Length: 305
Ligand code: PMP
Image (cartoon, rainbow, N blue to C red; front, side, top):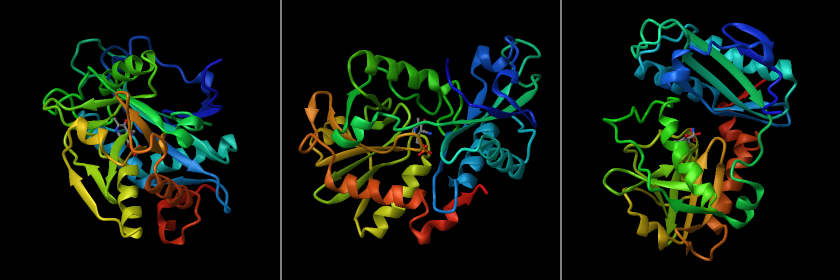
């Protein structure tokens, strides 16, 4: 039946998902001229709360700015649309997908004449890489597709078109029996997963992949705060794939994937070949923060009710 998103916000109105219709001649459908976000709301003692709402909305607006797409709604209106979609559907927890895109007007490649439309939908979405990956670790394979260089695609925009690259890598990885793809950059350095940033641990030091052609992950930033709380030494590095092969632990981060341990890369076991201890500790702290159990980070939660 596909995704059941209930009531969605579409161009300023709250309507049932089936009534939110888009032209088959929408520019975004033909040329990928859209920007989106992936946000999560978690069940807390004070009802559902959206995690880092402002940062996600800000990145959405920045993504649109990079594509020269004027967003027809203000920052506060988008935040409110997200909260109201959760309220109207009565969700206790959900994944939220705001989208801004170029609609139908003319089908020249030039996007500028096309109207800008906007949508927010939300639905229940569990462990992105599967429950098993959380216990046992996910299996990665280095993709033959590289992450687009910054002079090919806007790497800091969460643009729909960029995800042709991600979905090519993901489909090949899954077809080959792996859980997720590891994309390198044009120089052969580790970039990111198809929808996650990458960290590794060696001798107790947390290594985070430097931002180059990667998306500026909001979860990545949250993990850096957690590392500080744990008094972990953190190094921001460029890494080759074989540096990951010999790491003690590797994990991926993303709003959808949260903190997912990696058990193997290209058939090489990582550490003991299961979820690492530091990874598990970081994951536990992450889940505490997003569910409102760490008062220090309460300012990152927007309570829905
Ligand atoms: N990289 C890519 C390519 C992604 O799609 C995502 C998911 N948005 C991430 C990294 C992680 O970003 P975040 O932690 O903000 O969800």
